[in-house]
Length: 306
Image 1 (tube, one colour):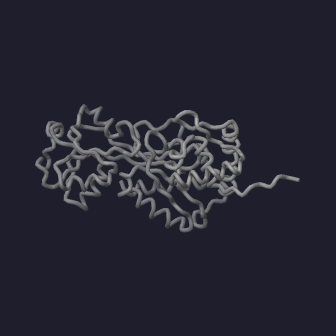
Image 2 (tube, one colour):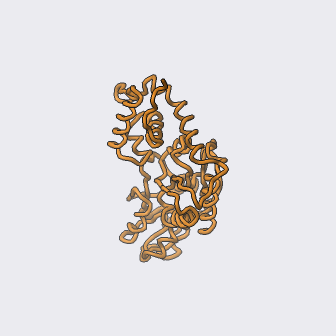
Image 3 (cartoon, one colour):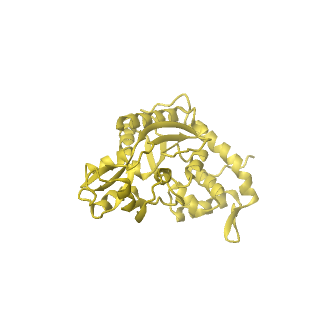
């Protein structure tokens, strides 16, 4: 008599796959956007279902058991099979689909780009759901694309990961944002004034190096004196209103807030190459009609805001 198959949903299998990849409850919770207690409960259930600890402590870290290691490949195959069953490549219709899509973006896109994506998404796929997550720092998004927890990633890297599919969306210029009554007069942000100013910077959660703008500043030979840092880009314009700080950002981001707040845009003081936005996806979804539709939607939204 065949052994009964235990009740195990796709989300639980996704959690198992991420646990096996990260070997950490906290990192798994962060990647999946769940609480640590929820992931701990899932791990306990997985241990009961498999009859194996899966993760055990070794010194100060967690490592996979032999059974856990043996599950990695068949689990990836099982999830790929489930995905193929739930998302037939030749039968996708955005008007009737109930699929859940997940896009990872940096938060500075949330004010001018993300609303354009949301508007088009729900107009074309009224029964589907869309989840937008913060861009995982230091290349963490590549794992999300590889294991299928992310459908698409949007950003403006100078050198995107080579093993991912890539499509350019649009270009944007570097500018500076200051309050309307900043001591530097309109048009007066010279190279010297820029170097002497106090600057505001944003350090993305989990990042341990300079971002795209910081790399561009290095190329331009400009060394900012950063006196204030924030965790989110969308806080920066509000901090400028009550300070003499200078914030280096992109024109689309600056233009949005210049229409809402008493802040003004100053040209970047030296020549700089435009920043290019891309969308990235993994080969596993390259031919899927649902992925092609989502990528086309994002491209259309990008063209509409430039």
